Amino acid sequence: MGYSLSILLSYFSIIARLTSNGYTGVPFDENYYVTWANNHASVLDQGREVQLSLDQSSGAGFVSKQSYISGFFHMMVKLPDKDSTGVITTFYLNSTSGAHSELDIEFLGGRGGPYVLQTNVYANATGNREQRIHLWFDPLSDFHDYQILWNQHRIVFFVDNIPIRVFKNNIKIGVSYPTNPMQIVGSIWQSDWAAGGGNKINWTQAPFEAHYRGFDIQACNSQQCNNSWWNQDKYWELSPDQLKAYQHVRAKYLYYDYCSDKPRYPNPPPECPSNS
Ligand SMILES: *[C@@H]1O[C@H](CO)[C@@H](O)[C@H](O)[C@H]1NC(C)=O
Ligand SMILES: *[C@@H]1O[C@H](CO)[C@@H](O)[C@H](O)[C@H]1NC(C)=O
Ligand SMILES: *[C@@H]1O[C@H](CO)[C@@H](O)[C@H](O)[C@H]1NC(C)=O
Ligand SMILES: *[C@@H]1O[C@H](CO)[C@@H](O)[C@H](O)[C@H]1NC(C)=O
Image (cartoon, rainbow, N blue to C red; front, side, top):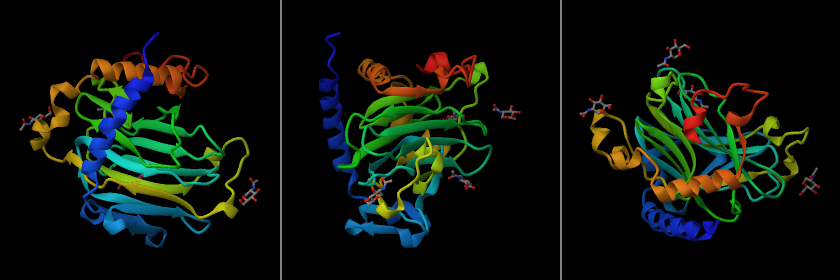
């Protein structure tokens, strides 16, 4: 339609570069700690990078020291540079109290591209809201920025500042919305489910190593949050440019959406119409 994604992408990647340059200063230890398998996690580059590795003995994970109730969360991630069938690399938010909430970004490893990014939203202990997109770049060769905006009005998942998923606050039509404190998590683990179709992880390729950068946190955990930039009315809706980019991603890269999975949900869940 004459509308060029490449212009948009270059516009957004400039923003991504500018912002990611600003991110590099904060060392891992300031905001995060390793919770799972210290011997499979290495802090590199004076605290600016963390490597998590998966082998037959263990995966690994880290979490934020604090929990948050809103923010613009992000992590720069470079995926294992291997045949990573059956390997799941994650960046997500997980509730630390109350009925379970989770905002997930999961990379489902595979053999060659295109690579699959799965998102999911749990609120009040209900999930099963998977969406999957193919990434439009090679996430193994470089760091890219994966982001989650969470305020009282909506949750937006982004890749390099391009919106890939919107989950609005639909409490008025009875759809639960995450409001309890959540912790930021990064992890790598093995899953036969993700390998799919009887495929298996190829352990002779181990260790599988995921790299994370960008340990600054723009989020807050008290009522004082109300004046934070991500809670301002500008962030209650996508801008017209973001909306175009979102529609383009949905048209071109979205290949699984629970909302259109008829066998699974003969009647689409109530939140679906307003989020697409
Ligand atoms: C989420 O956090 C809870 C409470 O800290 C913990 O028990 C649970 O294992 C975590 N789940 C995930 C998927 O990280
Ligand atoms: C959360 O789920 C419980 C049990 O299904 C339900 O009783 C409650 O009303 C829900 N709360 C919200 C805020 O949706
Ligand atoms: C597993 O990896 C090894 C080492 O790279 C390779 O030689 C072998 O062909 C792989 N096996 C499968 C089933 O892909
Ligand atoms: C902040 O916003 C919440 C939720 O909208 C509201 O309940 C609370 O009163 C506000 N707090 C302040 C200090 O404005």
